[in-house]
Image (cartoon, rainbow, N blue to C red; front, top):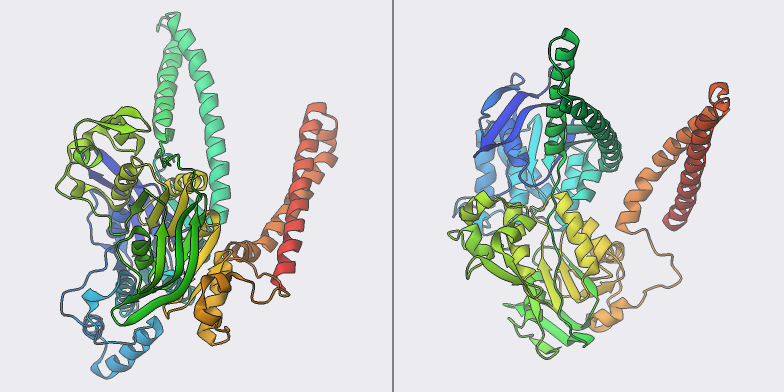
Length: 602
């Protein structure tokens, strides 16, 4: 059977440089493709081309006869006044579902997605619930392939788990643009990276995200060796050319042509493999005070609803706090309390004198009419960073912007580029406390990794609201959980909060007197083993396969040592023994880790 979607030699260009050129991409029945790549690589554009929403400049897209693609773009917007019911009824009508089936289908799909109020206005829903509605709206047509562009950006953790379960049970193909590494690990059986560092413009690996990382590292190492070998050959040929060979003989002419071809190949490879990364480095103040913010029995209300109460919490220099909870549980409100924008309904909040808080809002407020130059440097062509004068062009280049972009309006920037502008502005403000509200939305994976490193090294305090479980587990030293029902809990990691929330859902969690975070922080049953954290659970799910692969590598290494041809060659034998030692060390470590995780899991 032909592929559902077959894009051949696709090219798309915006401005002077092409986003991608001669890209070929197929989607088959049952595919679970995670599409990744750096900001600006063209992931969203490629997805829109696959959906038929954007035309390529060259190449063609073939869609299998009678196949139905469904496309959910990044921004989920609905007309003002439409209710959830009306959105779904319209989708059922467009999908030509018979009148008799519509009500049952509507109730089934809305119930599975968690919609309880079908008369709620769709446009007024939170970002996460609008995203759920957009996904459900797309699924009404029973598509052969679902195309999702950054679906986790506005979903809370419960919403991400809902989507993971939905995709796991799906009988259609899925292509997902995402930067959420846990989500990619859980939902993808194939990863494609769109990136100009690859000769074909993309790199495709069968397997989950962990497997992709291994294959990519091996590919890039091989490419680096090839590049170095070509560089040495070019160096030799350039020396020969400098001696002025006469192109009189066929042999000399062929060598000159070959040398020029190799020089061109090396130049193209050097251009393609030059990778820039954003220079993120938050600046802290030199404050000596350790206790920065102290909450004493704080309660917070929105309207007639209590978000949380009895909160005792101290934010100290160097602490890294992850703030988690369902949409609407009060995470952003908690940040507003920290900033002093809101006053608590009960209790008190004490802040250190002259406390400097720097806030990254998930709303990404930027004046869209400003040029990039004025957004980065409002007062001129220079700015001051860590006591040094920096030209705006140099500052822009640090965040991967070109000189051509400086005079373009902010409205032309992608979501990831806007996030980099905001981070660039935050870095100019020395901070005692960083308050980051969903900073990972639209950032590519390389930029996320740099952000993680800098947050770990930041000497001030950090309060981080994020749905990115990988970032949360890596950066946060403690997690403050809000359950959306007035309760709070303080935990060592995300996995413990997840367990607490599940106990709350099933009604098995004991209610702590006053629901104080200080009380919730105490172990509820110190005799019980700590369960696997979310990161460990993901690791445990794949470790048996990794052990099997390690066993195979160890057996192959032993076979090479015992090979008579290798045993008779001293240099080859030494290399084979070194490989065997490395394989044995890896195998021992994996078995030890497997035993450790198994002990925690049972």
